[in-house]
Amino acid sequence: MVIQPLTQTMISVGEAVLRRLDRTGFKATVALWLYEPESVGWRFVLAAPGVRRQGPRWAYGKILRAIRSVEASGEVFTLDNLTAKENTDPFIRALRKAVKTKPGISGVRYTRNAIDGHFIEDAYIYRVR
Image (tube, rainbow, N blue to C red; front, top):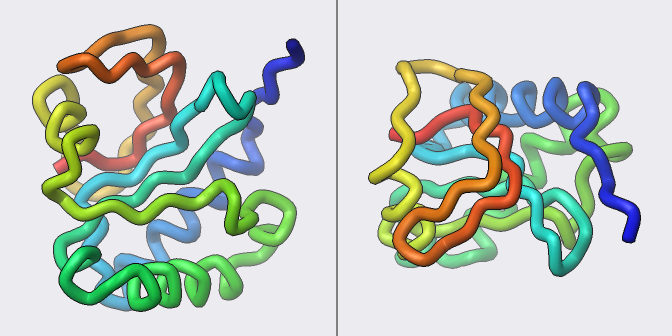
């Protein structure tokens, strides 16, 4: 099995997309690249209040507009590697128990840890509030 590495381009583009979302008012309280061993790939995970209430079309619309506005994002993102979650999602709540970042955007590598039954093989965390 060949493991896809997290590249510097993915990290930079993910940060640029998060900055763009911040400017548009999409209140991402959690943002990270999460390695998923079962798919042998990385997933960009965002959590924000209102995702469930406003609906997935609203959340993905905002995210996709931000992605389209960032140079080189087409090389990094597909609909298959994006996930928008509500703040109350069990994985997001578990992550908050273990990780806290400073205000703004951080760059924290989080590897081979289990939190409340959720195993994290590898993650690059921009924000957990």
